View: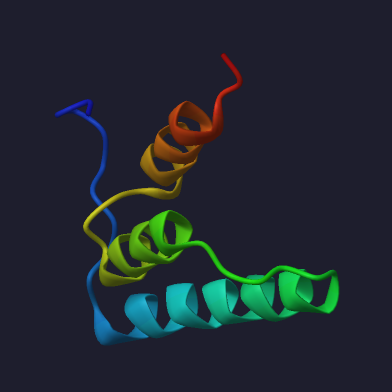
Length: 68
């Protein structure tokens, strides 16, 4: 984590906006057959809460699902 990177806005409006985006992405994925992944859902929760940035979430997921 880069300590100089701006932290996500934790205002109720920003949290609601991130939640709406995650919910819409999840719905789109479900229409394509997505059945759920606890690792992704946990990362989504931390992103929505403002604990991690979208870039930090992306890096975590890339590392998690990186092919050996």
